[in-house]
Length: 448
Image (cartoon, rainbow, N blue to C red; front, side, top):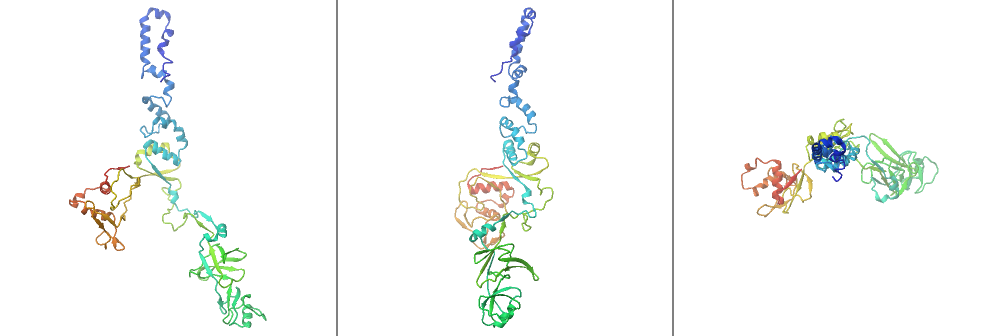
């Protein structure tokens, strides 16, 4: 306030009053000076006239006039909020500029309500067809084959004459048992002398006991699972094969859909064919098998909705949030998020429901929360092992007691000397407080 007084009215009285008035009525002049000085005192009209420039400065404006300034520049802002109002209003323009962003939502709850907020966008769990994120790994598979796991492994075996498939290419592996005449008949040739390793294209199914390997990979894998090919990356004896040049992948049907690889040349007996999926989905978005995915309903489940999870009731912040942060064209939903903060912990004896102190954690009250298999009785500290066959109404896991909420209340008979009827008035909050107080050695928690 060091600038006050530079426009003091009292100092101008002598200059403003005519001389004949001043000489005739000196007492009146003195009265006007005294009255002007009175008005220049704090909280009087002259005071504010002298400090107009200061009262428009957010850093220096008086507390009594701060609300009036708030009405001008932040009428939508609640008057009672957690942060320093002067600091808040100095950055109000930046706050308005960030309106509608996740950062503005976080700042709103921290500065005004001293509360944390979690923002959830339902569209992240909406079912959007073909929305999966695909990663093509085919080039890396070719270079670093050993880093990947094949989903088909087929070791080439020979087939006997009589089982040849017309049109397929074969390489002879066992010549005896089938005469040269029959080999020529199977190959559709005449006068050719065949030896092991010769190749031919089957014209008939063949006769005899001679064997040959074909250029076809189909049927079952080495694990006796039906082979499946989907534009795979293929290796033979760990050598990469080029589709369209070394082989052709085909989908066919003989009452059911099946898959096969037809190589340009017959394979040799013992050749190992491995196929790898050329990539993978890094997310399950768009998969009908994902039960957690939801269908759009144009209300909660849509691209323009979001959920705010805070420790405050929605009615407390809804109006201010709508006017300050919420962007037009969107819809928001509020949920109350409850936190428990342990302020002290002294007892590390295992008890049902005991949790290692870890700061803030969400309340989790499932129907049966599994706990340790052994613990101390409170009071006597005699080891109490529940590793016994399960009986009673609480249920069991693999024939042994499960330590859950039901068992915790049953365990009261070790710690509670009164009748069970005295627990009839307990609320959930009482249960939480008494449970933490008994097991962790503290009765002081903060629920926000």
